[in-house]
Amino acid sequence: LSPKYKLFKEQGLRPERQLPEALIIGVKKGGTRALLEFIRIHPDVRAAGSEVHFFDKNYHKGFQWYREHMPPTLEGQLTIEKTPSYFITKEAPRRVHMMNLSTKLLVVVRDPVTRAISDYTQAVSKKPDMKSFENLVFINGTVGSIVDTSWGPIKLGLYYKYLTRWLKFFPLSQLLFISGERLIQDPAIELKRVQDFLGLKKVVTEKHFYFNSTKGFPCLFKSEGHSAPHCLGKTKGRSHPYVDPLVLQRLRDFYRPFNMRFYQMTGINFGWP
Ligand code: A3P
Image (cartoon, rainbow, N blue to C red):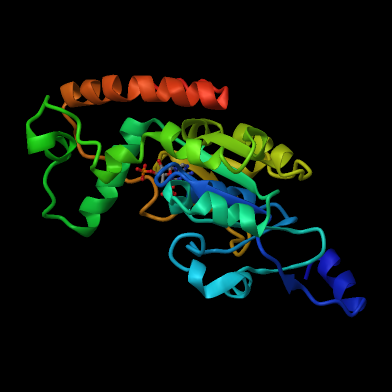
């Protein structure tokens, strides 16, 4: 038991479950699991382990249900949850706002082209007979024709569109955008921004991470529930299929104006190619 917890018990207090004060709302395949696992190392952070899907699928179950799905916390500990589909759920901004208009919102974003391939890689792993990525990207499956914006993996990369909805309910200052690329290259830098934003002491630092060259990703020396060094699971950091470079170029050209718009809205240039 931590000293804080012991003191708490001695005072006859019991940890209680609280609705989250902060949410990782997206984006799918952006690096949301990595962010959650990294921030929950912090002793003042308690996280729901699995995706709760309250503001999309389980809203009808009510706030009591939601609270019961949160971990018990001591006074001063922050409750956080991550469900990446919140970012694209139409009703989510209004619902989150209704729960608590000061909810802090974290969004991990990643180059929409690699994000789409990552999304596709995950889908193929569940449904191996899926058509090729190149085939699904274009309307009629003809390489080089019009990009199919109705296909989930492509549509989800139009970040500006989804962000517009959130900004109807929350000021930009209540959202923190985390670069998925930087979360891989230099997790400590992004974690510093996250801790500042959440009003936490800087506890998670470069000392917590090491680069595992077999996995090709940063891993943790230790964290809650793990006393030994460990990486994220096998479904995080999968190898992607080869994609025709012409298709990649076409997609980069497609996303460029939408990315620019997103950079303007957030005031951050994410440097996607
Ligand atoms: P890939 O598996 O396509 O490489 P999410 O958790 O939102 O589903 O995001 C998954 C992505 O997180 C992975 O996509 C991977 O690139 C990225 N990621 C970021 N940091 C990671 C880490 N330390 N270990 C593994 N994957 C990480």
